[in-house]
Length: 84
Image (cartoon, rainbow, N blue to C red):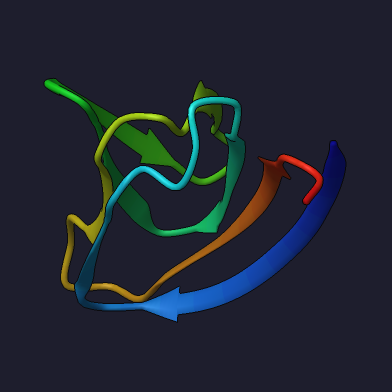
């Protein structure tokens, strides 16, 4: 297996939903500023500046700005795929 690392910087005022990429993938989210509503499966987490979350990304998950102010957050994804 080869790990694929990706980091994203997103300045968001909208929401984004993601389908689970793999049963062995994980995501680490850090909020730099603003408020972020993080949905992971059936759970909803309200994250603020300085908060972070780490979760197995094998469930549907979503990111949404939960305020009128801009939200800046970072996502580091560890996506594992099997070798062909």
